Image 1 (cartoon, rainbow, N blue to C red):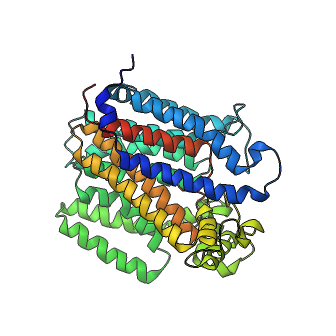
Image 2 (cartoon, rainbow, N blue to C red):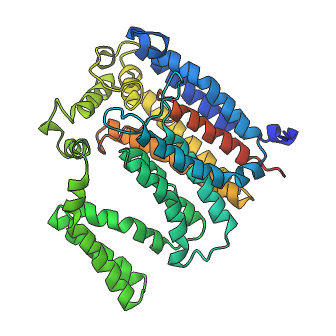
Image 3 (tube, rainbow, N blue to C red):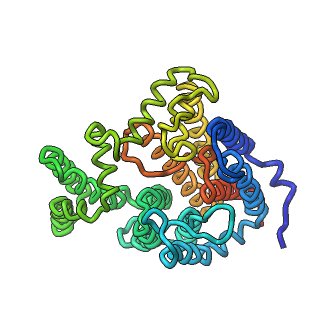
Length: 409
């Protein structure tokens, strides 16, 4: 039976609740502007749809908050396996725009299972790391946690959804570090990525090889291990062209447009160019609510979700965008602060994972709107319109509130 203790309410992190409420309200204001000239039915209006989805999102957040903490810990693994199952289900249905990301179960909006799997994987990883007294200073001790995250991530990548799969992978590094893993072993996890990215240019690859060799020598590994690590990464770099050819044409196009937007201004680079135009035209204070020309003349694509910060920049200006980013940073810092102060290892690790997920979404969404990284199709937490993502964002809020409160189950 669920038991709600009065102490919980006295210790609620008001700063976190206030930040989430403000971000949600700003999102609704922007969506209302976007929806002014939207035709169609009630659910075709992003503002109406967001309000409708907020109801189950808030209810689910409250339910998670009042659950006993041991219940979340106990059922972490079952929900992890449920997450693997549900991200596999879209492959048995019909594709949407040549992808298998969505489930149609008769609701007013389609379900994106990968969003839920993201939360389930983080909680399962937190349980594994907290339950096992692993000698994290040894390399083999991090293999199982990596496997936890790789399984659902590879399934999501196959859908294909590269952005979401990257976000699913990101929490494993800070969570392993928080568990005591050696930084050198965490470096080995990301080294192959740099080896492959730098291999397309001789100078960058040479510089990376020097840095790689220096770090391996500084780690004082055995001769055999050092040679294996160094030449293994060099080999990965040399076969990078094969990895490039394995990407789908639209993924290659996004990377090419990122490196050279002018090459295809009406094609793959169109989104980034229009986004930059919208943000730049807004200036410091913006054109005013509902007065964005890029937005309302429909030059800016996916404006209610992926590029909602561009709408905000055009209509409310740099001041509002900067304020939102600072508030998002404040929210993440507050979650990290509670992870640091938590006396419960499971809660601490879960909070680190949630903070990492929110940070990844905010950073990637912001970076792609200004052309710093290729377009990934990731929404901004609590502001972008969305069904599954909004619900899972509030699920994470419920978990943060639950795991931030010091009480005995």
